[in-house]
Each structure stands twice: as structure tokens, then as C-alpha cells.
Image 1 (tube, helix red, strand yellow):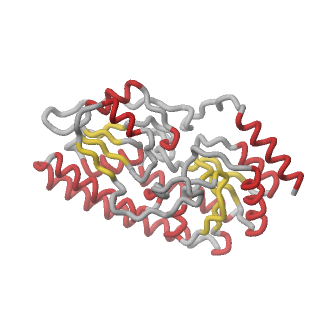
Image 2 (tube, rainbow, N blue to C red; image 1 turned 135 degrees about the vertical axis):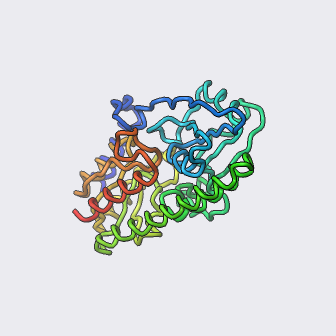
Image 3 (tube, rainbow, N blue to C red; image 1 turned 180 degrees about the horizontal axis):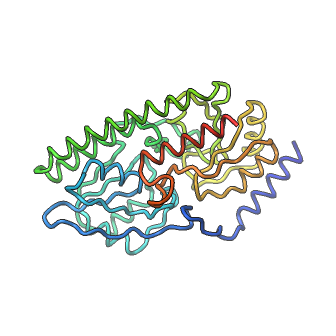
Length: 315
């Protein structure tokens, strides 16, 4: 135990002084600015904070509206630092769609700098959050979207907001929302079928941070722990917390540690070395991939993640 604590202290100190990771095709450090779309005159200009949420919103908006994304692909919304250009982008929009539940901590000062008025649609409105185990985030766990059933509520909230902003498009938004909800229901069934292929005793998740709670609750997995025991990546574990996680992994037999793309893998790799588990470091949980990647849409993102989680738990 003393050797483990000493090793963890070394790796924690090293992680604080790491140089920026080499950019990867879709990692948090390879962000590509989103292009400003051509907006149809007279219709509301829609700005969505996260890429996965923009895809959901575009499915509701259909061909009637063009949806622009604020945060570039691959960037972690927990730790996003807005640019001066972002204030101008926000100022130009007439509708802003955000996830809510505290994940967009940067937004309040950005909105103040942007000024003006706009309709704000909180996609997660009326959903009940899971508590943050760290107790540091009273809003609770914001990762509702990792259960497609919660995204049905997202779709309904977006439909209602777009109808308020553009009443003449109400029938379009209603039809598009209904069609997309059917796709989400089919996705939920597919995920349940994939999860059922994993033996119950191996449905154990260790994650980079507390992000898969809603997914686990829905599909019969157990979250053993997280490298960062918080619903935000904007935190750091203590040596004692790392040692406790190592003991939990050993006690439960959790088969893998699952990280989102772009997350610093060093702490997870240290834990893996201590426990003999593998590290699956390519989940898309907070951002879509590039169009030619494995997760260019929300539904693709979920299917890709499930395939990686199932394979990681089975092997």
C-alpha cells in the first residue's frame, strides 16, 4: 500500500507538469473551429453549445434552420475557455441551446460580454440529476445525454423552444421531433440488446470522471469508480482517492478503465499498471468526431461508445 501511494504521488506530480499532448485527430487538443453557416434571412439564428447537442437540435430543426456549434469538435465543455470571437458569435444568435445542469460554467460571463437578448433553451430542463459524488457540484451530474431516453426530453424541449422562436415552423419541428424520437427509442433498444451480451458480473465501469452514471443506471452496469471522482474533469484526485480506486478495482474485478478521447491517460495507465486492467481511451462522450470519424452524429456516437464498452467488458 505504501508503494502504491508513493507511485501515485509521483504520477500526480508528473501530471501537473506535463507538456500539452500531441494533437490527435479528434482529441480535445485538436479542436477545429466550426464554420459559420449561411443563415436564411428572417428565420432565427440558432447557436448550440456542444456538438452532440447541435446534431440533436439539427434533427429537430431539419432543413428549415441552420444550426451552428459554439464549442469546436473535440473540446471538453467542462474546461472550455471561450475566445473573443465567441462573444461575437453569441451576440449574433437569436436562440441559444445549452445542455444545462452546470456543465457550461463558462457561459454566464460569456453571455454578459455578448450582451443583447436571445431565447435560451435548456435541453435538460425538467430532468432530475444524479448527485455529484464529490459534493462539489450542487447542480448534480450533467451527463443526461448518455442515456437516449433523456435525449427524448431534450428533443421535446428543443421542439418547444424552436416553436416559440419560429411559430410558422411549428409543424416542421413537431414532425421532425416525432421522427427523431422514434430513432432514439430504436437506439435505446439496440443498446439494451448489446448490453445483454455482457455477463452481469462483468458489467463494471471505471471511468475518467463520473460521466456514465445515467448510462449505467439504464443498462444494468455498475460504476465502480472514476479516476477523477467528480462529474467534472475540472478537478484532480488525491493520492488517497487513487489508492482507494485501485483497491476497488482489485476487489470487484472491473475489467477496464474507460476514457473519453483527449483525456490525459497517464493516471489511468498508472492504475492499470497497478491492477492489470486495460485502458480503453477512445470513447466520444462530450463531443462528436469529425465527419469522417466513428462518431459524426449523436446516434453514431452512442453506438460507437457502446461497442467499445461492450468489447472492453467482455475481453
